[in-house]
Image (cartoon, rainbow, N blue to C red; front, side, top):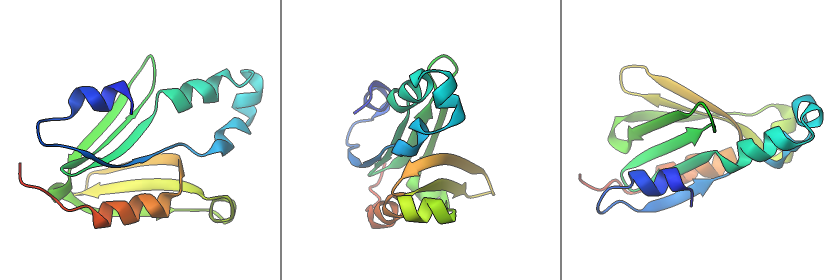
Length: 126
């Protein structure tokens, strides 16, 4: 597991599922022009985790974007997949919280599995 998630876990919190970025990030124009350094950095610095208490998502090396939301505050987890996304197994996962806040993360491998693991996660008291 990544160092960010390890550093923010609280007592009694455990990781239930960890998603990865899809391999398709290596087959983009940006990947080609950066000699595949950009997708390697993106892969190594992205963490998408469901714990028994919250969802934790972190992206970025120099500028970091983090998203953490308690499971009780999440209204829905939406998955958007194109034709190629369905065929190859990647998509965008959007977390909608109470009050309408929405965060989206693209190129997640097996996004339907991510949503199912969220739905299966038993929420524990804090």
